[in-house]
Image (tube, rainbow, N blue to C red; front, side, top):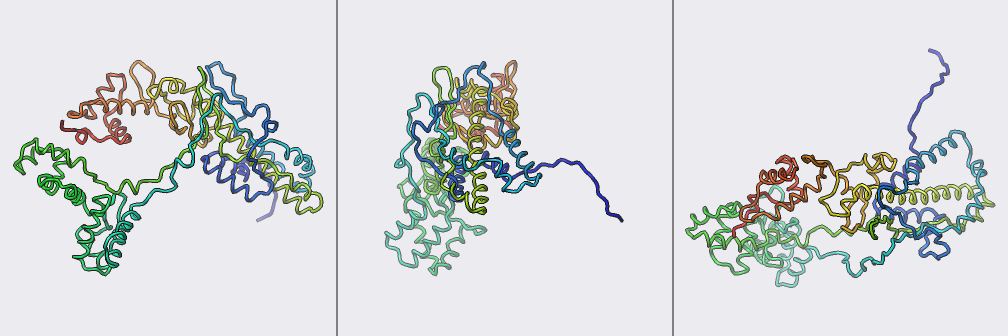
Length: 504
């Protein structure tokens, strides 16, 4: 064994905190970015938010908007995000390797003059589209929270004539309802649910059954049922339906679902016409009475970018409404003069604030560039509709704007664009290609809409099978397998042909 020195040359990827922050900001949604900026405003004293801008601070290009015209547009001039980040990152690494201390790095830049000039610099401008006069919806048009099913049921019980032990049992029942309003316990048969809850509430099982029947007649009628059959029967009894409807619900729900009306008519010794009428009545009942109260909370989407059409041109405009506009504060400039520790702290926070402002600005420009490229490549979609949506993958946009595919994926994730044809996620415009005979390929989303249109025009008494839809699409030059039609149909939430059949 011996000790000796060796010289080795190697390359390795270094992810600085600034580079990690830039990547993180790029893939954030709009709401996440606003929350992150608010948190940074609390932690970094050198950051300031300006609510309103005077006209002289806005600058000459504050009202400019990016334009997407014909193919002969001027080439994009903004540097790619990776190149700028890589250049800044190399500079940080070189300075770290050279061993310069904080005071020597600070001596390269006149921080006092920088702060003095930056204090007067305008924050990011608010871009406006030509002719854009639409206002955002007011706060009074939205609700903070809807009423929950458990709250609605317990309120009705408290307004009724229930004893304390019955209210305790009712609270246990309400606490075990699923999203559809059914009373179900894991690994417990339906007939044993009430005795188990009654024992826990300290009430007689027979009294518990009576309380449950009363709860099933509360609004909405049919909640707290243990099975679908019980739910439908409670509703039928509550609305005073005749005995035939109750017999069909008790004995022939599977045949009713399969529309096997002949078997029902033979067993109950009634005519097919009567069975058809019963089927229409049962179809009007609600098999999921609790869904109106336990549905997901509405998610309000704020677009990151707008696409406006003025004449024959499309204008891509970033949405800066509600986004905090940042600038460097000059308040701590005097503290840099006397105390070396304060100077080092302020310089660290200053570099962090400067990088954050530059990263947000670069994120904004990158989203606009990617949206411009999407609008240019999907011009037929914006002009004519979803039937003209073209196949497109991340590589197509990455090559056009000079970025990596991973960057395009981050830019388009959880980012929304408001267009003349509606609000879309940027990911919506990326679709796989499906071949057509003697024609250009078609996007998978366009095929989904074609399937939806074919089913919408079918005869309800004789719905089209997946094989028949394949043949219709083949007549349009679209070659697609039957299992692919079934997959797209399920993605659209459309039932199979047997369940779509209606008796006229």
